[in-house]
Image (tube, rainbow, N blue to C red; front, side):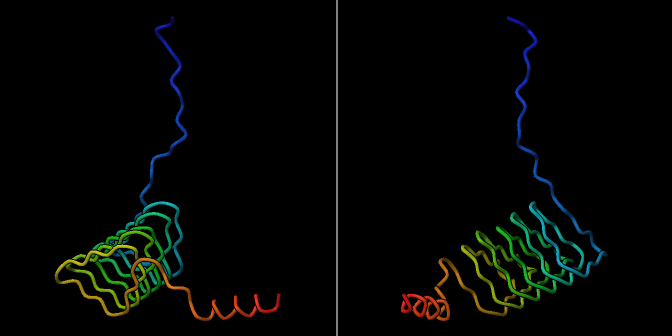
Length: 136
């Protein structure tokens, strides 16, 4: 038996964190497969299949779609988090949120509607399905 054995290669890649620093602004949509931290300003929609961290100096003027979010800054738009949304004491959200779980620290500000858990089927979708099934 050899002292030097070949190490098995792993296919897992380390998660990267995309960052937008304080004092930086972007106009346009951001899409990412990995975590995003925003301390600057985004005028556009932000979408990630992972976690969004919005620092206390961060501002998003647009809609957010993510798995998890930790918000310290300001969002003017809708939030759709498939798992967990945490609004810290310095957070300000102006827009509707759709989440599975929500944590709101004392002092956080939220103006909008909140939908938690399983989303109800929209009436329009039910009507369209009924008309399609009636034609069969």
